[in-house]
Length: 75
Image (cartoon, rainbow, N blue to C red; front, side):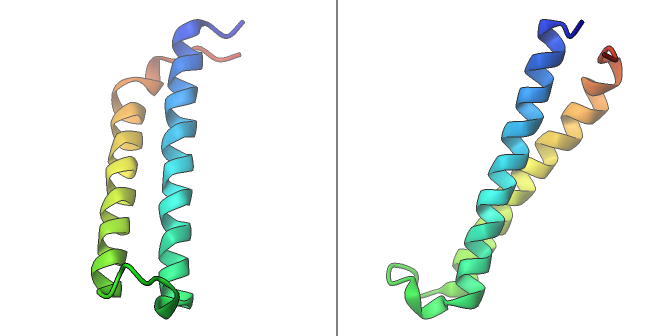
């Protein structure tokens, strides 16, 4: 049986992975169609901002795996 703690941890990981995919998709848009993003004249700056967001979520996953996931029960 999966307990509430495990469900919360799985939800946090799923959320972080989803955020990573969103920001990576944005990077792909900037790389493949930089002229199509009118409000971003600094395409490299916009990509760096997206990669910073990816790093944030990667860090969160690492923290969860280091401090929380190791004690999850198996189901």
